[in-house]
Length: 400
Image (cartoon, rainbow, N blue to C red; front, side, top):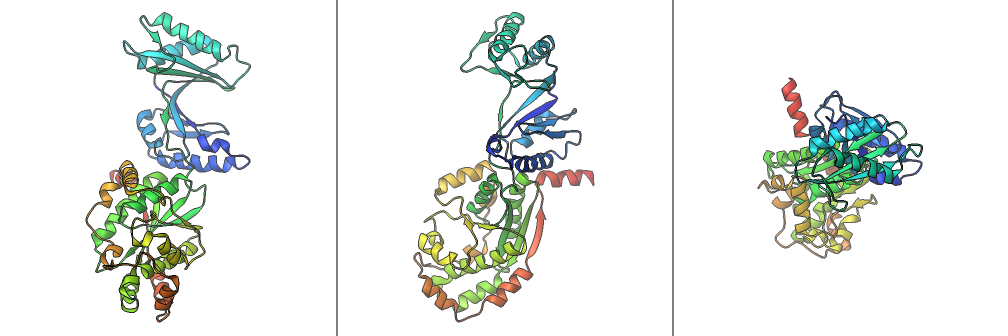
């Protein structure tokens, strides 16, 4: 018996009240986007469940796509059958035989949402467990740690049989928590911050600062490749590449060397804030981890943050480098981040940056030059790229 659908469980979405449908709509769009190259598959949803009707598509390949969709707590490939005990028993046996091999143990997990069904939960477990034991010689029960857990859920419209529960990415559907701008360098931290923000339902647009000829095209491509990885979560991702050379050169002319890092971060934040406002964002995301480098001490963050009232989201603020690298490896960005192409922050880094900069001092140094025209110019000349996942680009190449 082949699975004909995949049952999706909402998880955190189930805790929502009157606005639950908004989250379900976002999740439905995310699922459709994730499986759009399986044209026969269809997505259906109600308040409690979502289903992918496979219509002959490969359930294993579809399941691989669903693992990365935020908002899914878990999912199970399933078979839908009539609420007739004889038909259900035949389907259960056929499904079980496909998964069973000698020596495997099992249990039945029944669930009766339709209270009018003739068997209650315990009776479902007993009736179907006995049917399998009768028809499969040598089969043994293990209720604590079975090799196969055959789940039978009786709902008002039908009964659903499944034997696998696959863990999803959890979180909230991308886009359900508004839009924010991610300050995306070529390093390890910021892609992880972007990923974790997406997990909380944020639609993320990247902002990358390039300083040619001091930074190369390969450094820019590295960031595009990181964006491609992040876009696998949302289907596509917008990347803004800001020309930052003039601003950075002027900073080094006007500001004492040990304060250049602080001013650089402040002006990056001002540019990002303009792009946020221009593109309808509500917050700015950074990959800062408290105390990791000179610009990430609490004193530095206080001096840098002064240029904006926009919320700054720091998903990594309490994590250490090892934890961040573990997540980067999991989401497949670590290898790309480790490529030896420097961004503008590392190229222009001062030899002894201030770890405890004074706000009044940095304001004083910046007061001798009006950076506003350069900021406006950088925003106007920003290159905006719509980046799609590598897998989607491959599909387009195969078609054309």
